[in-house]
Amino acid sequence: MKVRITKDYALIIVDVQYDSMPGGALPVPDGDRVVPVLNKYIKIFTEKGAQIVASRDWHPENHSSFKEYGGIWPSHCVQNTHGAMFHSDLQLPENTYIVSKATHPDKDAYSAFSGTDLAAYLKEKNIKRVFIGGLATDYCVKATVLDAIKEGFCTFFLEDASKGVDVNKGDVDRAIDEMLEHGGIKLTISDII
Ligand SMILES: [Zn+2]
Image (cartoon, rainbow, N blue to C red; front, side):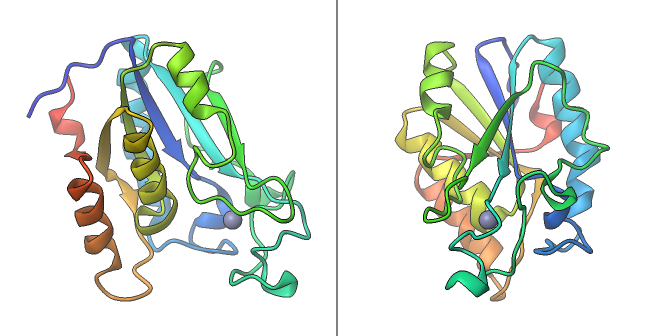
């Protein structure tokens, strides 16, 4: 498949933050390897005048998803800490639309569309197709892809720009199957022109 990128498309980069990197609070194995691949997508999308979006987990320090507050995760991506910063090698252009999610103590959000204005923002800009990659395939990327489909966007999953956790062996494969079953389209950089 070949897809020609136009200005009516958006690249959505999910949660490429230090706490999702090896050594971070909630590491994705090889999570840092998505960065150079995403930079290639960023370069192409920017050249074509397409919109770049970057989502981030952006929790208060007493967030309900943290173990000490009744959740299942260790404390991670606390607002304004190093762990919540985007990987510094990620070459986000200045006009990147930053989406902060799960910013209130009592609400969690895996999807970049959950509790944010992302859908409205993209629709206002008349974006028709979205291309989604980042971390982690079997959590926030999957949730973002499924929500994008629900919102009516033609949705592409960037397989080479995403890494999963695979807590239970096969989680990543199942996540990809689920995205495709719902109408997501799998893509790699060689499909982009
Ligand atoms: Zn979180």
